[in-house]
Structures are given as C-alpha cells and as structure tokens.
Image 1 (cartoon, rainbow, N blue to C red):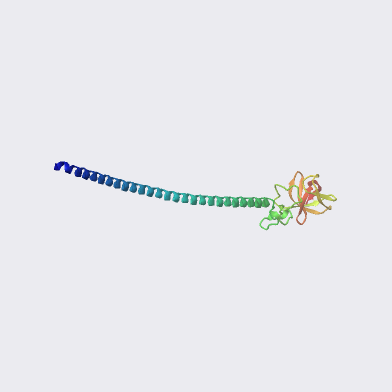
Image 2 (tube, helix red, strand yellow):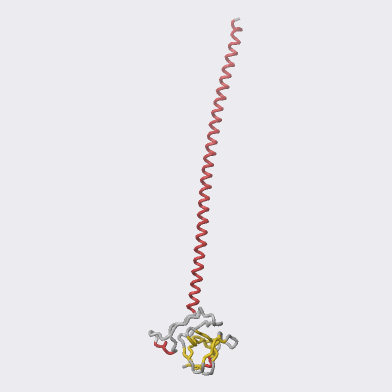
Length: 198
C-alpha cells in the first residue's frame, strides 16, 4: 500500500522537473534570440554607417568634379580670349609696313617713306592690301586733280583729290592701283598710270 501512496508524489516531481527543463530551454532560446537580434541590429547599424560614409564621400567627390569642370571651363575661356587677342595682334602686325630709312638697311632710303603704317583702325578704306612693299615709294602726281579712292577701282568711293606735281608715297599695289598716303595717317588708292615714280 505504501507504493501506491508514493505514486502521486513521484508524478508531481517528474512534472516539476519537466517544467524546469522547459523553462530553462525557453530562457536559453530567448537569450539566444536576443543575442542574434542584437548582432543583426549591430550589423545593420554598421552597414548604415558605412553607407552614409560612402554617400558623403561620393557627394564630396562629385562636388570636386563640378569644381574642376567649372575651373576647366574658365581656363578654356581664357585660352580662347588669349587666342583671339593673339589673332587680332597678328592681323594688326600684318597690316604694318617696316620702317623706312632704317640706318641698318642702306637700301631703305631709296623709297623716301619715313614710318611704319598701320591700317588696322582705318575705316575709310574699303580694300586693304594683302601684301606691302618692303619700303614706301615716292611718286609724283602727273595729272590734274588725281582722285584718291577707298579701293582699287573707279567704282569705289572718292576720299580726296591731290594736285598735279604733288608727292604721294605708295605702300602696296593691286590691279594697277597703288595704296598711297596723301597726308598724315590718310591712305587711299590711286591709278598707277597717273603717277610717276621719283
């Protein structure tokens, strides 16, 4: 009879042990899940920080690229401006005739001219020569009232006229017309057959 009386006590003890084991397992599982969640959250935070750092680096790099593009455009504009200035200076230089009566050049006194001419700012001439004489050459007007024109032809505008026996200095020739100076800084074209070389 004592064995039957101890049976409920044994059943209760086994149940308690089973409950304790289940509780321990539940606690261990909860702790493991907590650790997994913590590690996952830490990894996600780390990835976010790295992503933010990379995004910031990308923005800084893009800003530098934009700055370089702006500076490059400014340099290209400066180069274009300097190139244009150089071309303008070259054109003005091409329109100049070397000075005559140069003491280093004994042949330069033959023509009788005395200075370089610059036609770059001359608005009266319709046609400017492509090539000039090495020196200015003096001519005597052989007709009465010789017309000075803006270009090498009778269809061009008359700029002035010079009297017979006046002296004009020629600097270029085109189609039997001479580019001459007839007063200070005044230039025009005359028919070559109406003047005589001195």
